[in-house]
Image 1 (tube, one colour):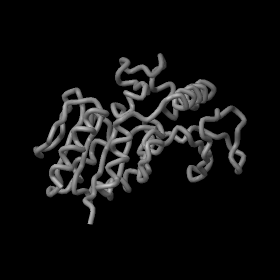
Image 2 (cartoon, helix red, strand yellow):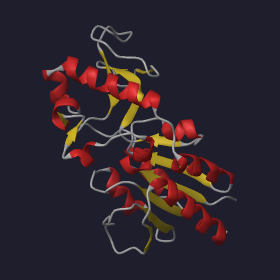
Image 3 (spheres, helix red, strand yellow):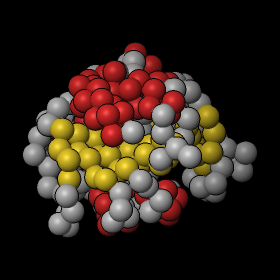
Image 4 (cartoon, one colour):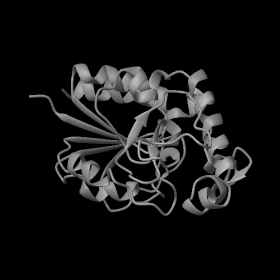
Length: 230
């Protein structure tokens, strides 16, 4: 029976693919305050700006490709039961071939109803414009979990994490909750790994194997170490 390998990924996972993060740019995301483009209040105050912001992100994503880190995680499915839990809204894990991906913060390539959050539509890289409506007649919005909103997939992520034999954190500062709190659900028997070129504080007193590399190189090193332990 394959060991369950659970990977929590953040912005650093996609950085080498050219996807920018607001935390690396002084709290601004593409020159916008995060509150203006990633909060329910921002949506109420300036819907046009919010739609344009995510339309631009979608076009940017269409030009990006999965990096060696994404491809390396997908390749690990030959040897482990791999589950990816990502804070990223891009689709690079799926495009690299990962088959089990939970998106905590939503998905850029989907839109949803403002009236019924269960009405979700695949839109690919197309724009969402003012006047684009769901079947109930309400405006479509990006399928993104904005600051201050509930994280519907967190329960599924907790369930997956609590069954891990190996838990790997890649490219996340572990500052954003509830995602950062998943560490608390990693079983005591599981090995814990961290891939990040920066120093990251891991809460608790667990033994953590640190690979101080960007995602691509880090996944390569991780793979070699995990295969040596098999």
